[in-house]
Image (cartoon, rainbow, N blue to C red; front, side, top):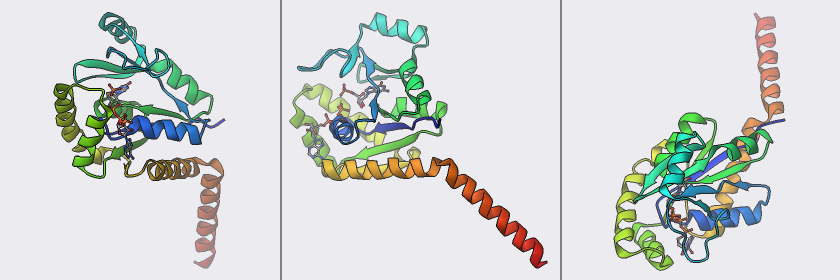
Length: 211
Ligand SMILES: Nc1ncnc2c1ncn2[C@@H]1O[C@H](COP(=O)(O)OP(=O)(O)OP(=O)(O)O)[C@@H](O)[C@H]1O
Ligand SMILES: Nc1nc2c(ncn2[C@@H]2O[C@H](COP(=O)(O)O)[C@@H](O)[C@H]2O)c(=O)[nH]1
């Protein structure tokens, strides 16, 4: 059985990662979502085990010490991390999994899983990014300013990603990401590699007989 694809979706706060991820999962129910652990307080409507595993700092530090996280990062005053076992089990079962995480963590995942598919979601403009994060209404002005200053640093790391996708319209962004996932599956198809090897063999044999 082929291993599943590890897809990492990053991008600045407020660009629409969560929104795009939710729409991708609606379109492709087989795509598994990695629920992160965090020390951030739940927002109104967020559920433990669904949006995040909400942890105290002590519980999170125990997860770090017990090597239970594939990666973690401190972002704007809170810890965020990806539970390791669930990702490894999902990939071993041949299922695709998507991680929606910030840039420092994504680059750590890239060191461990260079075969992953790393997608950076971009806003159509910085003005629109600001409007989205303000419009969501979940953060204080202080936190918004902090998240926007981190956003600029994050966008400087865009070149470390395999793909950049603009989230202008949610449907278009999802279609672009779905096209990337389809293409990445094709690249990994064993029969294609066998066919390419066969063609190379044929070419070598032909060149040999022409000499
Ligand atoms: N393509 C879009 N057009 C207009 N608004 C959008 C679009 N995508 C997302 N939004 C809106 O932007 C806001 C931020 O989206 P979302 O919470 O998904 O961002 P995020 O990148 O997951 O943020 P964070 O990293 O802070 O969790 C939400 O109010 C969402 O409805
Ligand atoms: N490195 C990680 N970053 C993560 C993880 N889960 C979420 N995130 C990112 O944190 C910021 C803030 O999230 P918010 O829910 O407080 O708005 C955002 O960029 C998320 O993508 C994780 O496991 N590791």
